[in-house]
Image (tube, rainbow, N blue to C red; front, side, top):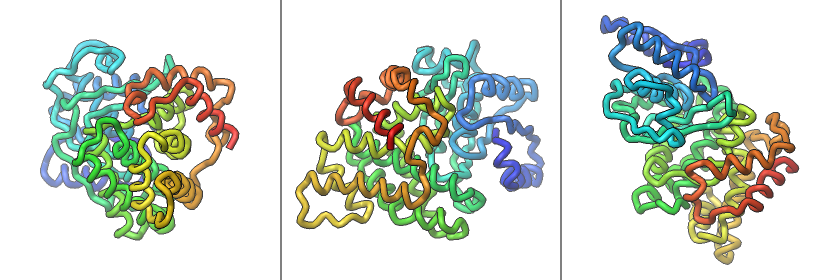
Length: 351
């Protein structure tokens, strides 16, 4: 299960060559799109069953890995895949096929999580399958496979990983273990993302970024994410904005809103990002974390305004309503009011 970009980058050959050498039969489904849709999941599951497959390899970024998880569910369960999302409410049985996840980006951490995020194109909303059953059985994490990522994808996926780490660290469900993973991931991203964007052949930076992505994935798989993901999912559903870009753009706005809930944690984030917080008050140090994220975003070319991404400011009310329906909304340390979320979107449109 992969996408055309992975195929065109020659990365499919890395896997298919190994399978051929081992005389293992396989079939390729490369129609997975960014923000994978439910129709493509159904098509992939139909191919799985018609070819009598017995396992799945997911090769690519978050979209192929999330789609592969859902395809495994659809291939072994009756009915529409929407039934097995959080909104559908139907439980996933432990009968899904074995799954090997091979990430080619350093962003989603989907190779180590129990989530699959899908887009319902008819309703223009994102839906989540969340169950340990769909977690990959094996994850092969090789920084060499990220070498072909262009600078823009490196930037956006890297900011996606940073969002996972930040939201995991401040989550209401955070534990000592998830905090340890998350803060180290933040440190690695802060010291390596710029270098990975500037020079894709810098394998030390590439290695540290894919490690950070995996650690952030392990962290949020256990402590979950929060408001950034709620608003980003709304943007992705309505305007088909890539998830990493939506996260990257909205992260500073949500961080600034959450500051007063746990300033000590934001001070930790500032220090992990290399900020000097000596002689600052706790709140001053906390604010440095937001400023540091904004500087990082600017240095690597993250868009500053939602209009640049094709979003329509006339849909803010719809975006707010959809954000409130996302399961992660309640896990931020400060639950936003409807007015607060509205203001976040307004600020992002007017930046």
